[in-house]
Image (cartoon, rainbow, N blue to C red; front, side, top):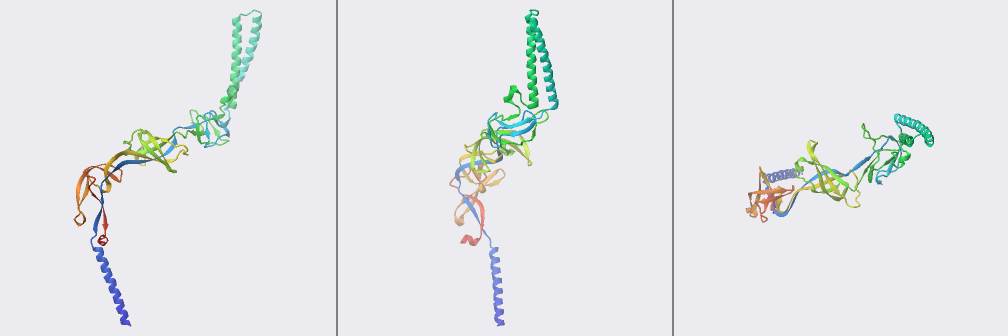
Length: 372
């Protein structure tokens, strides 16, 4: 029994040894090299670039107050459509004390002058009726009374504007009512009821009550690398794809190419703007991220081969023509003149015909697999 077990173990060891030897021998055998082969075709070549950017309204207006004060009411909200002149918010005036004091002093002085003008007019009128003064002198006193009345009315209006932000003579144009300056969609209202607001002056830009824009007039704004900007020209067509709206694309026309580069991540880039033709019913929001596809160059109905079949050597380009079939197959190196490339296929201007066959990248296969 022990003798039988020894024989079995010896047989197993022998099989393992033989199997290992056969495996290593097969691995050491040379592998045959197989190449892809391509036939030139007539097709269209387009060299395109993708520019990342965003969609925004051409004109976005910040509505600011004409007076300083406190927001007492907000009548609209972001997303609402407003017409030019429509009220967005109301402001309660907080008068400047020095201006208020000056306005009140002006009113008091105007009242004194008006009272004296009335006395002078009454006295002059009695003398005129008694034919003791000339008509010319009487007219001058009458004119002085009119001017005093006008000055009193102007002083009252000025006081009302400083104190209340509104006067009787311009109630419809009250500066306490914040009105939209254009027709469009309200993009943002960054203030709340109770917030203090200030008017624009030499020292600050003033508080923005609302941002309003015409969302039917949109532009694409992005940056393009300096290596490609030289191929752009105004009115060049573009295809805009919005990241949030993958099923929709829009046509655009290049309008602006910045004359000055800006540095971004160590590279020089130029800003571009394009007018976007929006389809009716498209709900595009300001600030959407978007990609613009621009065709930099194109060639129609030209002879092309995969760029992987081209051998680049200095300024020259070569292909390997397939000669013969089967075991007699050979490859002949031939110089060609190339043209436009889209990164996958490349234009062949001369050196090839549509009847030729060219060698592509190699495929390594086992000898056994090739025989099977």
